Image (cartoon, rainbow, N blue to C red):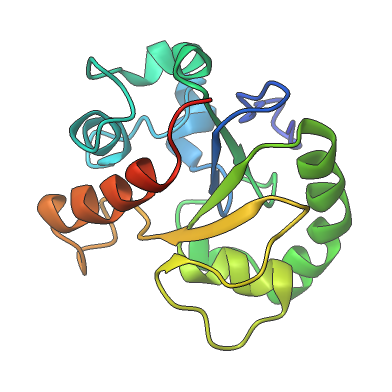
Length: 173
């Protein structure tokens, strides 16, 4: 998904096992051209520790996620310092294109990183962690804690437990 900055956060291919879906790209990702690149972001170590990758990838290795049946996208293309800068209106406007993209790429599972993204895409008012009871764009929908360094509600260990639950539920095709 290319926003006004020209940064394309999408690491996608048809039929992936899991697409990790952030709310929007971080300003640091736009600045250096790689997803989850802020040093405080725990995405890459969590993926490895949860068993999605056999080595700890770096942001510069993000395209290698495809080798593991995984991808990355974001609901909203506009980069911000903080995800809470995205308005309800931006989510509403982003939904049709995001849903069409997910249908086109047809992942088995969409893992929304944070409750707010799934709630905005489905209109659900009470979103819990883990597998969502309803599908989104014909894919299983999961809600995982956001690995951002700004999200200190979850320790590294708690993030690994949550992501490992998804890993066990979605064996590689």
